Image 1 (cartoon, helix red, strand yellow):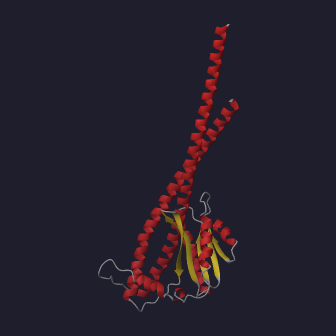
Image 2 (cartoon, rainbow, N blue to C red; image 1 turned 90 degrees about the vertical axis):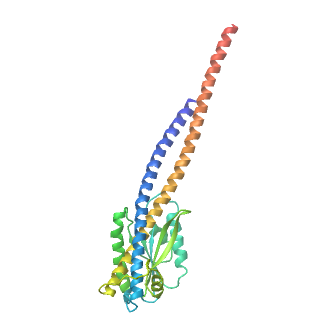
Image 3 (tube, one colour; image 1 turned 120 degrees about the horizontal axis):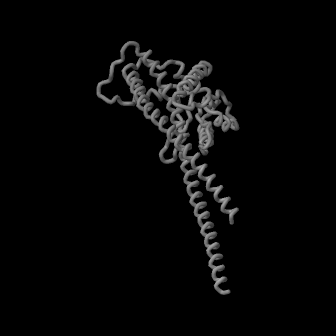
Length: 294
């Protein structure tokens, strides 16, 4: 009985230590989610402003053309930029994204190449028949997203010089209140007539359109660069927010399971202890009765 009690004590102590670790990781995930969600909210406002600026330029200056390097026809190679996760305790985060990429790109004909952000998603997609290009390191904070986006934009510029008719797609997870996260895709380039029609359909919030000062074409190029930058930045921030949301959900499940296990262990320990006490009392009573019978 003593061995069993000692074993239960060790299990209770281990479960308590594990619960402390889980709570710490849960707090870290919750803290990380906050910074990424705030970044996404800020980006949404800025992204909307960039779209409005592009819409005004297209509406008021029909002669302004999108730079030729990014508005070719939808032909040629397809490059996919895929955001994954290199951290643990995120469940099927990378598996879901890899399956989504393979299924989506499988609908498109022609040659394809995959660029990955994260070593683990790179490994998941290595088993597919799609050739792999660049592999970028995942940022660990909001501050390190900007350098990553700069690296991707430089590679995109070189890629577009060699593949003028290529298309660029973004793949990443987006936070979803119902299912924690959802895989989404966005065509980043080219900025063709379809894109121009979608942008020009955005209504300015007031009746009077603002005037474009100085060179409209230079202004358009600046806004296009901002459009590409904020699209990549937002995709990365949403992916990191989804990753931490998945980790937080996993920690919440782990904490619930540990609490239930601790409750069961404590109940078992107290029951064994009470049985031991009952046995000792029974021995005392039996001995006392035996002495009175003599």
